[in-house]
Image 1 (cartoon, helix red, strand yellow):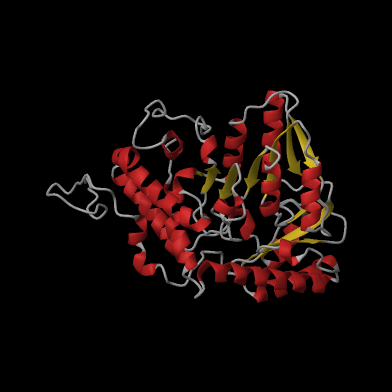
Image 2 (cartoon, helix red, strand yellow):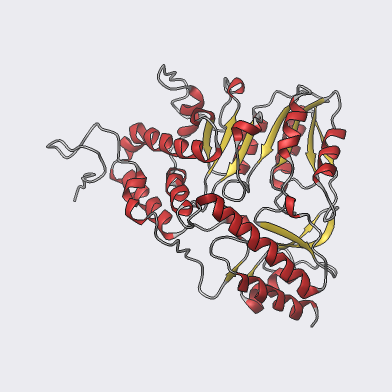
Length: 422
């Protein structure tokens, strides 16, 4: 039986169809925004690795499913008309959350794609240098390797010590790596494997003062620490939202400085790119639609921002502080349990902490490291253990999200005692 979208549109003519814009998705769950967040994490599992893929609460997933339903009601209308309305709603919500003009935010599926997009838009020549640190995410390093192979540009790596490090050391290392051939500085805001919060607020203006572009990889930032893009003012900023913003999987954005938006293109050009519009700039049109795909995860971002921000009386500031304090205390508990000192300065901690572990690393069969395997299989604890290549042979990265409690870290400490001292 044919179905018509009888509850989707703001006004209904006799036909049941309408030319009006669709109802904002947040209205669909408006009565549930202040509900306690319920995360569908497997019963009995202690999840301490929110940083890799995140977890979306049930209210957000309900909005996601509703968007998918609306798409299937009339895919033609959804892709031809409604998609832009929903994308604008998402940009408006993100605009307030990260303090950036909505028209400067392009939606993408994750930070990895965002990094690839920016790098593929660069005009590089043989001998040009791109600076990264040795804490950069491997997907970014891989993409840099590809672009340098294509163009003859060169990667220059600034060395950052771990775990004994300061913001001043990071700033000095990055700035010392700059030469007359430097074309771009690409730096993580929060390093993935080491979890260090880098002082990009100081680095960005120093780099720009030298006339060099700076690209900040903020994959772990939205929802973990406060982000003010207007104050930061990078050339580009990339982020994922499915980690600490608790959106469905496959969400993110690229901030592009307005003077770099002309000619800035997505990795895939749709059938509409040639259709220039007076009412909407190409930067938005080209990224909003890159061919047939399920864009609903990004379109649910406004619900995530509202729902997670309603969990504590102080809103997002209170939630970030709660998670930060829990991560710091959790790290202390774990370090005490295995008899080591927590050496990372608290000023460089968000809601994740990487803890150096004693012993020789061994490859796992299920995960990167055999200790990761044992913690999962023997104790039902999901926490990553991996190498920081050239920096430290084995670290454990813990993370604190709303669903975590101090008891989770106490159980991890007890499990580590068992596994490290059999």
